[in-house]
Length: 176
DNA sequence: GCCAACGTTGGC
DNA sequence: GCCAACGTTGGC
Image (cartoon, rainbow, N blue to C red):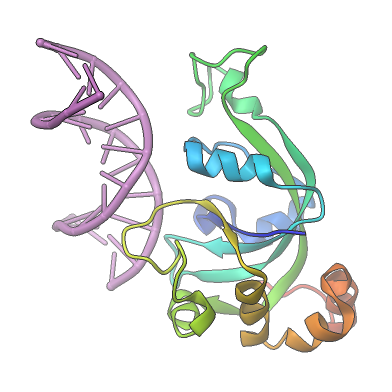
């Protein structure tokens, strides 16, 4: 199982939107490195859902990859801002995965707070000038992020696949 | 294949 | 709104 971070602007699509829709195709990624990361994802992988261009910025929750990479639908839609005339259906240039909500963080883990975690000293998130929107995080980084918002006990005792159950027992998803 | 110009991301 | 950083484009 691998761990990832997904950036999204909450004004466009935030964690509460993911909770509302249940399953979301993560389309519109138009950066090759980010795309390659999408292609490395497997169903079951967990993602930190990060709010960028927000006030404040930070990790809002955990999502799960529920479908591995398949062709991004928007690349074939001329009406879409993500249309790519150079892409073809026999050789699609861009990929997307499907993600679902797992657990909202009880409080937003702000970018400042992430910077305070030693595990996150070296990451595209905390490195100046990095704009990558999809990248891997280490298990230690993932665990540290959960621990910082009080979900470490869940992590340690239940394991990642039981976060959903623990969330339900804790009283349902929070919103920001 | 180089690199200048341009557009975009994203923190502040 | 500013601007640093970076990816992409396109002329040569």
